[in-house]
Image 1 (cartoon, helix red, strand yellow):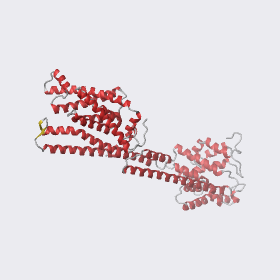
Image 2 (cartoon, helix red, strand yellow; image 1 turned 120 degrees about the horizontal axis):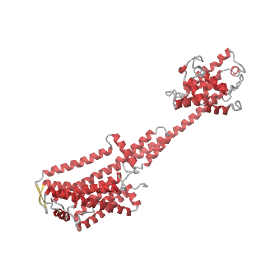
Image 3 (cartoon, rainbow, N blue to C red; image 1 turned 180 degrees about the horizontal axis):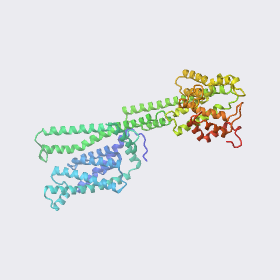
Image 4 (cartoon, one colour; image 1 turned 135 degrees about the vertical axis):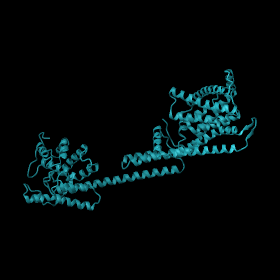
Amino acid sequence: MEVYSHISSKKNGRIILTAVVFGIVVNFVLYFIMHMLKLPIYLDTVGTMSVAGAGGIFPGILTAVITNTMCMSFDGNAIYYGCINAIIAMWTAWFVKNRSFRKIKDICLFVVFSGLLSGGLGALIQWWLHGDAENSSVISILDSMGLKDGTSRFFGFLGINILFNAFDKGLSFSCAKFGLKLIPENALNKLRLCTWRQRPLSKTERKNLKQINKNTGFSLKRRMTFTLVGMSFVLVIITFAVGMKALPTINTPGSGDVPILDFLVRVIIIMLGYFILVVAYGLWISDTYMAYPVSTLVMVVDDFISAGSDQVKQDEAVKKIRRLDIHTGDEVEKLYSSICDLALNQTEQMRSLRRFSENNAKMQDGLIITMADLVENRDSDTGAHIQKTAAYVKIIVEGLYKKGYYAEKITPKFINDVVTSAPLHDIGKINVPDSVLNKPGKLNPDEFEIIKTHTTAGKNIIEKAIYTVEGENYLKEARNMAAYHHERWDGKGYPEKLHGEVIPLSARIMAVADVFDALTSPRVYKPAFPLDEALNMIKEGSGSQFDPKCVEVFMDSLSEVKVVLKKYNSNTFEGGCL
């Protein structure tokens, strides 16, 4: 596995330069030997394949073009084939990046295509320059085959040249692969990674970037490619047009008078290799310093935005941003540093806000419990009523949510608001006199009317709190439960005789929880009902006193209900009643 570490620009340059020089020397020496032996193979791409395979397209093309330029010192025609070797460098780099050399079929594909490419283009260039093969051995083969006619001789030469080039490229590939095995893996890793100005991207990440670029419409990389290729092509056309207006013939030493068109074609063939080199350099720079850094920034910033308020996802997104390690040394790096600081600061602010919110929520819960305790402490007979009703409310509302009932109403926020504010449902009892609240017997009609006022009193108390604490939505559900938890499904409840779904959902939930706790808890005026009898009474109230769906999920959750009963009513339910 490649281990990435930040390398300075100067050191990166030295690594690339060392690899290119090594590749040029290998190409030059092998080509010189083959030329002196007058063999129809060249081995002038061994170094090119090595550098392109390990370092990428631009170092490979640079190696190819400089090799052919230097080889002019002993072979004046070498310069014409720089474009072919540059294309071989591109093909090698692409193949290494997208395929592998582990399978025989991949190696065969590489060698065959390389032979077709270099052999075909080389034959065309030789035929244009000389009207025949350039190598004496190939000429002898063509003569022995009796190919004298121009067309037949050309196609014969084309086939022979492709075969020789396929052999040449297969041998060059074998030499390159063997040579790379002799180089320490650490040195190869440095060469592979030194062209990046950020953390290198995996194949999966590069595929994701391609998808992002497709969705962009006209990506930065595509725009830079069109600009570089387009401008270079325009310059070539202008050069050609200007040359066509020059003298009809140009005298070249050793060649006599060369027609201007032939001269321009020779210039274009020579310049094509440099054209490819310039375009490759421009694309390499734009990719390394602009396209990849900007695109990866877009990708990780999108992840940060998608994290929303999820603290864990935010922290992971910030780590992804910082792991990019962009070091282009220009405005892109400054932008990256600013985004890092911005994301980190925003994440820390969100963390602080979340802590503040959590502390605020704890204080809110504590206030609610304190207010509820004020009432319960006055009532000598309600034994953990607020804790039990809150637990039953939680069981019912979560049961409704799981079954998909009232899906448009029940959200995670609604569940939290209802469970949190459930202890306030009897807050209005603070206005009920002790003589009525703690009467050890049945209430008379007047006393019952007094006790009924705890619903409207609770509503008024919480509405004042809502007015004081603006925007606290949880208090709205507290108000609904306090005001309407004694309403009935059939409309015979109090204080407003609401019916059915007109009754707020939180109040309908509390109605079941409140009555069940009243039935299963002892009071000064009655003992606790047995569990089975209490459950039957709840069932009988379904559709008349209670919302049928609330009763349904309550009965379906008896195992959880019994846990609450056992916790708070252990002395009441003994002997296996639970």
